[in-house]
Length: 135
Image (cartoon, rainbow, N blue to C red; front, top):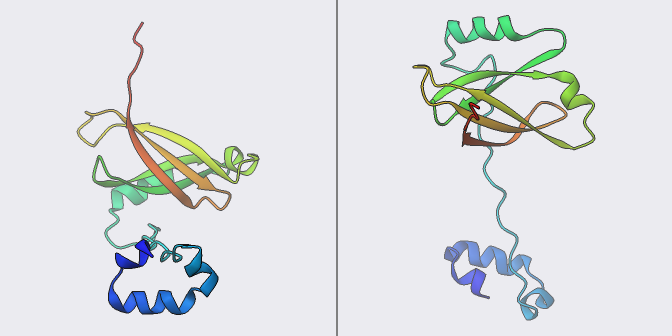
């Protein structure tokens, strides 16, 4: 019952209705709400610059799919070219792809690792610093 104590009163009533006596006896927690979906960035999204649209057209080819990513470090939407075969031929249901780039001022080299499904939808993304071995 600890999980129910932390919920809003109206939510507690709903959760108690959905829980069986057995669930309550065994202290099985309520099913959490589904996470809210973030809006997906597409070519029709507002605020895309003409410069970005030109980059997309330049990068996209028969064997390359361009995915738009909101880079939290750069605070910009960036186009990421993804080789179609790397996703389509993968046995993994969600494929990790890393893209190294710099912020617009050409400083702060960093990497975005995208986890893409076979429809090229981003399931997860992480940013990391890049350390190069110069030897």
